Length: 275
Image (cartoon, rainbow, N blue to C red; front, side):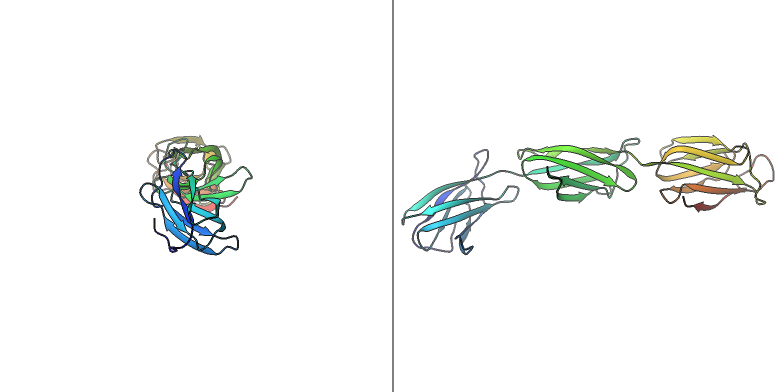
């Protein structure tokens, strides 16, 4: 390792990880107690290093490397001979995984993944990709809370232990928020349609079925937030695309009263009504 000072005394030592292996390329800086920088350099392939200072005295040696926890140590230089020192750099941990829905195992994109320390402070965060994948680097060894939030899903919190030895794989399953979805089926004169079959389907092939009551009303309980196809009438009726979220969970459907079959030309969704 090279230094910017070639004078009396200095530090001769090694930069190692907690396993005792060298950390080549580690950056080192030596400062005095007034905060003045007196020298810097990098560790060699075997982790060895040497920094020189202009005179004897007490100094602080700083070391850091990518994927490791920075460290600092006091060194006392009392003679022209080099002072021996070894700096141990603990390795940080990378946490990675996939965020999915618990029902259909579909990936959840744009989920916020946060890492919280024992005091409840957020020390870092990242977002899941379109494939539901996330990755976070730089966790110091220890125990953390991993919190995942998404506007259409219930929050999830897990415990993660960063060892600093190898990456931690943590997959997270989220449960969609659920609402009661209800609506009413009427004709163009405002009269209710009773005994009309109503079907709510998602993209996975799952379906919920109901029949309107005497007031033309139908209701589905605990429906997860999302986009659905609403089919009112027989199986030939044209599906209507429905967005179910906190602001849209009521619907009014207008059917033309021509015959009992209510074919695909008769059903239209008039509007989405807020809560």
